[in-house]
Image 1 (cartoon, helix red, strand yellow):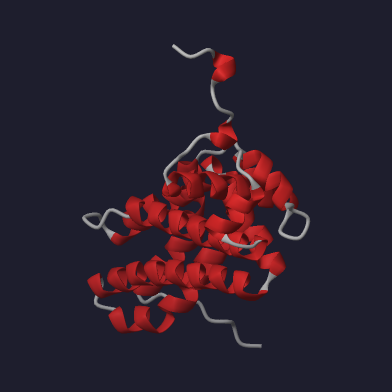
Image 2 (cartoon, rainbow, N blue to C red):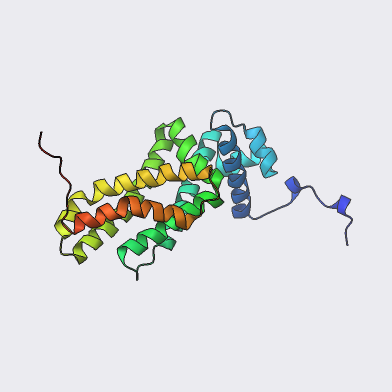
Length: 219
């Protein structure tokens, strides 16, 4: 059995490319979440990942490329987590509740991912913000499909189709704001957070699909 001191250092160990890329991206997300895009250094990412800077450039490109790939990976992971939580055999409201629980669970477990997605990428702007906009659009479409499904069950599919996208955008925005708040309140469980949002928003959706619409009073 080789002596511990004779083992090659972490940087020298040969790993499959996919494993090494994941290692680099994990380090990049950690550093970008801590410092932001502009202040983050490739030197620190190299140290955290345990690889040389030339290897980072060879595998994943420049700092800009690395930031973009970090956003893409974390956005994909987040959406996959939400979609995995939406159980299609349940009624629309329960599908949404489970999806929200998965969302808040992801934010709690992967704080650095959420920080990069919701704060750093939007601050930098440009193509990075466009990636977040695309992720948000997919989330809105997912919620809107549930709203339309609920309305169709009640025979009010046309009304739900008309307002579903806008109301779903409002729900996604509220979910993101609550997620930011929840980072400072880790004692609140994902189930409670999801229930709060359902009580705030879904009851209004339900009134809508039942045909009850609020209107301003005269005068």
